[in-house]
Length: 242
Image (cartoon, rainbow, N blue to C red; front, side, top):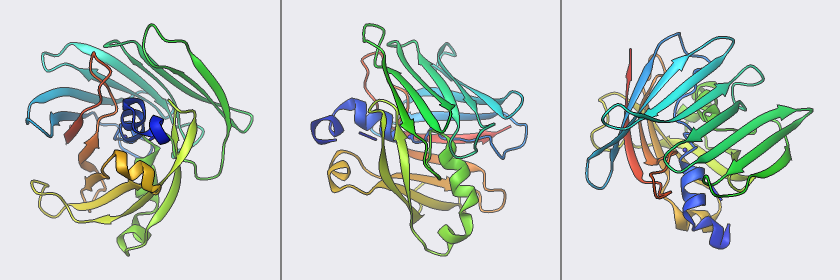
């Protein structure tokens, strides 16, 4: 699908934190060479807001295109899992408002570049890469890697990178009850901020997986892509694996 005090309550925190969280939603780090399409609906109105198409490229790199309901592509993300399944590098560009995010790896650091919109100044920072740090869609690989302890009821804490704040925040993965409308038999998990202050800003993300092939089926939470006004909506994304 992340950010503190007043900043935590701003749309930059709410959006980039929990949006990215899903984390771009899907990681192809361990997935077969298939295309996955996610349809994002407004939790408030049920309206289709956008679609995201995940396509494998080569050498553990993947492309995500975001399109309007009419099919027009308005944003694109490229993910590179060659360094780590959980801590990938990525570049994301949103033509709706000019927001741009870039996370790259060099000499034990994560180099983070963030531009809020086309009129904003780029912000750059090098962050020390820690073992197990989760970046963007790496959350999906984390769930799959720690599937057994999560299924046993254990809660796992991680540090998740929030590019707009150029720092990490603590989140807790745990097994959860599936929401109404989730495919029968799915296994669900929640991803919630550890800080009480962040909890005041956003609800936990709930994701649903196929328990057999561990394919992501549904994501409910804050979107990771904003509208033309820079607003991040609460969405219900339903996935088809082609």
